[in-house]
Image 1 (cartoon, rainbow, N blue to C red):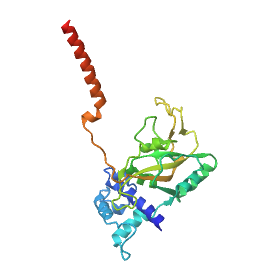
Image 2 (cartoon, rainbow, N blue to C red; image 1 turned 135 degrees about the vertical axis):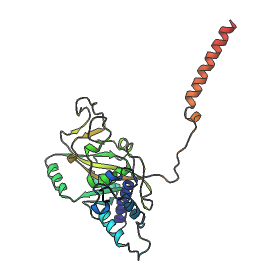
Image 3 (cartoon, rainbow, N blue to C red; image 1 turned 90 degrees about the horizontal axis):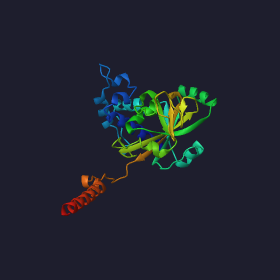
Length: 284
């Protein structure tokens, strides 16, 4: 029961992360018609008001019954999905991926993603005729609602250092650099600020570019530990690694002098040497 509640908690947290972002219109796609205004835009005011009324999990009041509007809202966005989340242990993850990846930084939670849509049958047929492997994908927290529900798409990537595509890595710490903590659901048992990392299964194919490959004319060659996939049909998010911001962690704000102490002292030392040299010349 607790595992199911934490999975629901994560789904709500991802939704809230997208709702709070200024790019909510694209992050929440597809938005059902009954949550759109007459002009077709998302009725974000109503959506945010309903989010604020969501009860904390697990329910403390066993007699609590949400009103019909909130019940419909929860069924629409959190209960009727082609992707199911389930909490698993580190040992289960290692057993399922067969030692293909190394966890350098242990997450607080790991959630497995089970795809139950028709597209998964197409994926399985394609995978049956090829080999596959696992790799990490990092992204901002607000993007993971879309990643869970729609998957990864090469045309949505804004960081095209080596060409357009989905960027993955064989090294966890590299992908984590692209997954900063984001503000989630304030009532979440997972924590109000989360960072996520996806472990994706990738079908080996010529559209999967690795070290030394040059995706297109004019682009740099792909370096070690990077993977570029130019066909989103070859990638499936399989696991979400969830990290929380440590309690009481504060960011130290330092002064200009503290941040540039070495450079300032070096400049002062050089100035002193110049002054001494000039004084000697004047004395002569």
